[in-house]
View 1: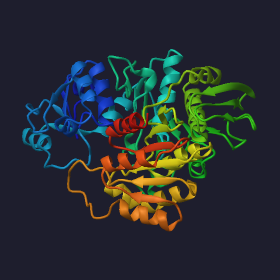
View 2: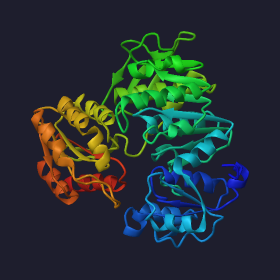
View 3: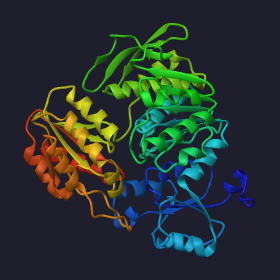
View 4: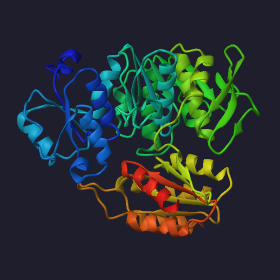
Length: 475
């Protein structure tokens, strides 16, 4: 629109975030506040008393928090940031429309910050975005580049008593690192200096739509960084202006792994990274298990190389990377050798990566999966069920609760029962236990020495508290 304010004018105005505690909203609010903007917000979870520590931390950092009743929207100078899917019946949106406030989606605001930085480094793909964003952000921070980082997960390296929910880093405006989302099509808003593509697989959209979105994304990137091990991602290589490839298996990948050099343990791994530009080799130590995390590390190393960081420096930095909250986050191991893990797995590919990592070591697996919505469960339920069937052993078990639901008009006729039935028909052991309290009791009653219990799901911060509660009861 012609009267849209310039970035300087935009960031001089007060912001109001609807759902300020959300994983996509909170880091943006933190970045704006760190740059001197006045930031307020509301959140349904705040009103309901959920995750009180998070909102107490926000108030301590100087964020104004309001009930989600519209009372925080008082002037048309305010810029109202809300999800693209938010309904007009929400009081803040009613008031914003009444006052004719400028409204931005989370992605629109993030893309303005990204595209007006000196160089934007984007991380795209169906799975692994938050981990690679955290790794890349840490490499740039550890090597003195002072990046600004926008992530959807808490990065443990940046957590402090003042900022216990560090899903962002407020650095310089010369480098802006962000995960970018294909699920709502907003990836089309970004113009990356470096565009990383991790993988292309079914999640919220059809494969045809995903190929189009990711292909266009590469064509807009000055330098594309592409996973050569992922056939769908590699097939989009012709869209790239200039490309750098990485991969564990593809011997032609420019950043790769020396064959036979991988040494993997249950909580960490090591491998020899090869820079095929000059044939140099660099010993990588990574405090995260799983082949997918080795691939994530290569993506971050290659992305940093595209931004001018030598491979040797990136490898050294990753030895000090502490990981992300809720990404194969080990809550603890009891005296009876029962390990509880908190994990963000919520689509077929993410779940498969976590389950395969767990199944590569001894011990029975008890998985709890809370679907992150009724819509996603309809879209990918069959593929999700097949993931559990393919990976789980005869003694393993998965429990599904009802999907997460915080209100709204979503169609709730089809839930977890269908997925449990599909898993059982595939020969694996699955149960539907609707309520979380009953799930907790069931897991505690099932657990025996040597088990691994993994809590999986997205869009619900209380899952971490749930995982800790199970560990405490078993301890």
